[in-house]
Image (cartoon, rainbow, N blue to C red; front, side, top):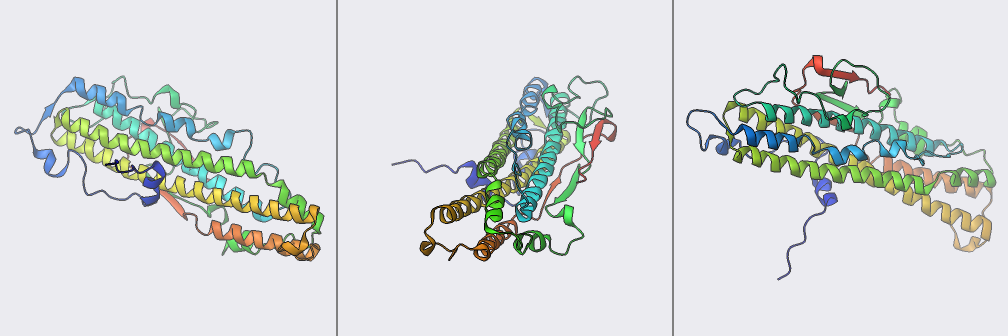
Amino acid sequence: MAPEPQPTPQDEWAAWDTSPERQSYWPGLGLEHKDGYEDGYEVDHARLQTIGLHLMTEFDDVYHLLHKPFHSGAKMDDGIMDWQAADTVSFLISNFEEALCCLTGDAMMECTAAAALVTTTGRSYEFADDHALRAKPSLWNGLPEGVGGSKGDYRVSNAYPAGTIGLLTPYENIKDPIADYITYNNSHHEKNRVQIREMLMSWKVDAVADYATATVNIANGLVEVAHAFVFRAQEIRDAPWRGPAADKAQKTLKQIFESVRGLAAVHGEVGLRTNECAEILRSAQHRFDGVVNKGGWEFSDLWNGDDGDAREFLTNVNRQLGDVMGRLPERALIDLPGLIPEGERDVYSLAW
């Protein structure tokens, strides 16, 4: 009998809520946390140290993916020429995704703090004053790039530990920016057929598609992080580590896990919608260029291919882009335990 097919990472994050969703079960909590100890405390320090060191590296693969779309040679908005709807789509998606990466960085920092606490504690769940694993791994010093300050070892955004970012934050004073700047934008209404072709062809399909792929890869990586959190929680339970401090550690991991799932779902949705934009653009360029440059009017939706038909064609493309943008998550949020003491935080602003 053939084995049951396993869900892909995309299958998983597509089924997750874009907000941190509370889990009813977690290893080592509930009925499990009372098993095996009578005096309220049990710990294997050596085993915990090993678990904590593994936990500290769970985000490393995701770290190499974060911000990749924004520092690559071909950015999503590369080359756009006077096409306001496309420029707005690119601006909103790329800025929302970059802020989302910063929230993901906050979850990374929280994971490191949780790992340090697992590694160095037993009866309590508090930072010691002089333990060697207080600082984050040096691998993460560049997130986000160009942010100064040296207040603490942990660099987090001003949304930490519990905050929200909005897709439409840059246009918060506009009644309906998707309609005004994308769906019903008429900035091309005075353009002729040649100018509209230049606008349409200026947005690079490959850049948009590459951006979508990079974003989906982040979501897939976060699925693996979520799996690792459950595995480490099971290891902590079986180490053994039991007692009030162990309960705090497990509740912390559970809360970070819930935020990671929400972040994965939002990254994934952004990637899917961006890929839809790429497909709309690819189809539009192919149809428009094929008709205008090669004839064949009778088989096209451009009718006679005159200036008015070209304007109507781009209007329809704008409407398709607006529909995609209307299906993006409106916001993303984190709800982390807030383990990092204020004096240890190097805080940067997510202000647009």
